[in-house]
Image 1 (cartoon, rainbow, N blue to C red):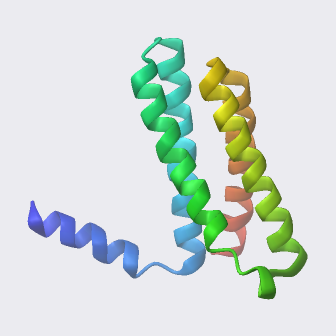
Image 2 (cartoon, rainbow, N blue to C red):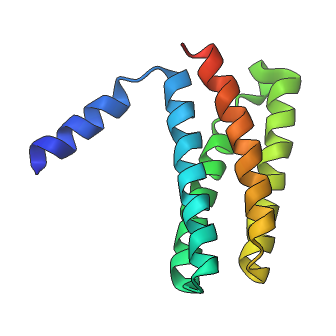
Length: 119
């Protein structure tokens, strides 16, 4: 199993920055979709775990924004990430799958853009 873990770590550390962003978006989307399923199944502990994982990813994306070099784009992304975090918090409190679907849609749109420029 150690070899597989090393392979996974190496595959992540050798990816381009654009590909890493795509991987992060895909992870957040996957966790949010799982949270929707868990809300529908009324497994609120699992829902909270998946929401926490997606929030961690979005917070990481927010943290690494270069506000100085990124200018208006970075400012807009930061506002969008904060909007997503608020929606996730509200969805968690109210078990609102619609709010999660909105965040998934936004992440998917960003992901598609990153895929287009990272090829």
